[in-house]
Image 1: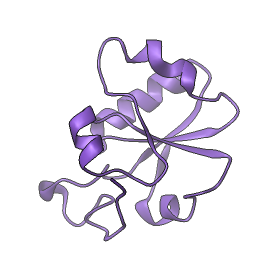
Image 2: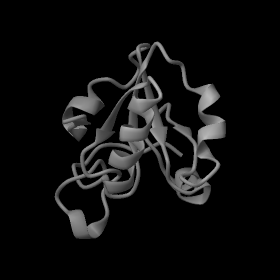
Image 3: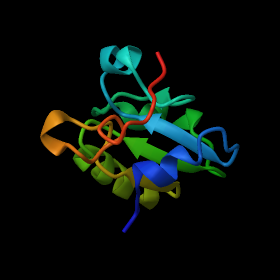
Length: 109
């Protein structure tokens, strides 16, 4: 199970061994994201952008609800990345109370 809770992920903000990766649309990322996160929107060409991700750090991947991030993590792990999915993603209303925002954590803009 390659998942991390919002509570545990929040403790890792600022940790140099961690990269937060949002795979949400660029507009949604601009509207709010986890502090320090980078954005590679999900899609067919996203693998081409993975060269910005360091192989020697753990990537915490998040989407809207956690489902797409979990699939992305599976693919990243096959490529050799140490990656985990944020449980509940950023948190959509239907997922309340799970997810980053639904858990009450801050977003950066």
